[in-house]
Image 1 (cartoon, rainbow, N blue to C red):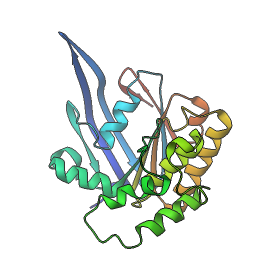
Image 2 (tube, rainbow, N blue to C red; image 1 turned 120 degrees about the horizontal axis):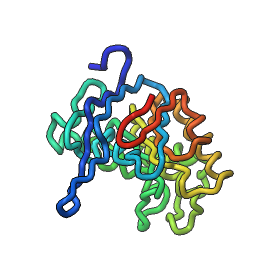
Image 3 (cartoon, rainbow, N blue to C red; image 1 turned 135 degrees about the horizontal axis):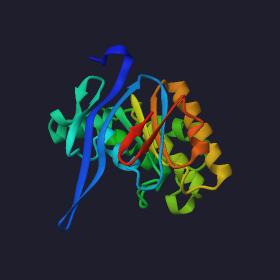
Image 4 (cartoon, one colour; image 1 turned 90 degrees about the vertical axis):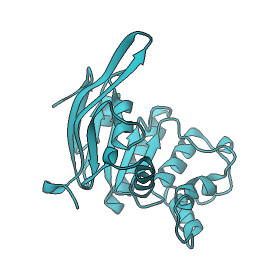
Length: 228
C-alpha cells in the first residue's frame, strides 16, 4: 500500500550516532522527510553534514539509532534483515560517487548482477543489460572491465546497473563527484532522461549547488537536520 498523498518514501525521526572511544558523535539529529512518487529531490549540504548517512538509511543500507523509513508503506526497519535486503534489491537502485563496480566483471556482467541476485527466472537478463548499456551509450563496451573504462564510462555502467531491476526509487550519492564538469553534466543529463522515461523517483545528495539546481525540489541538510 502506498503512503497517503502520493508519497513513496517517508522518513520519521531519523537519528544516527556513532561511538568513538568515550565520545558519541551525533550525525543525524531527527530527520523527517517525505518524497513524492516520481519526483526528483536533491538534498544539498557541506561535507560532513550527514548526506551520505541519510541516503544509506533511506536505502536500508544502514540502520538508524532511532526512527524509521517506509518505502511504499513498508517499514524498512520493521522487517527482517533478509526481507529488507530483498526489498532493496527489487525496489531500490543505487548510484555511488565511487562507482562500486566489481573489477573482475565486465560491463555487462556488472549491470546484470542485481537481476542475477534475485531468486527468479533469469530469461532475458542479458538482453535487458545490453539494452541499458546501449541506452547509456556503451553498447560497444559490453565486454570491457572497469579498468578499461574512463571514470565517466564507469559511472554510466553504474547508472545502468542501478536501473537493471526497474526500481521504484533511485538513490544517488554525489554521482558526479569524481568526474570533470563536462562529464558530470553528461551523467546528470543521462540520469534525468532515464528517470523521466521510467518514472522512477530520484533522491540525490550533493555538496554542489550547481548540481542542486537540477532538482524539482531542493532541501538542505546542516548539522544533522533538514533545513527547508
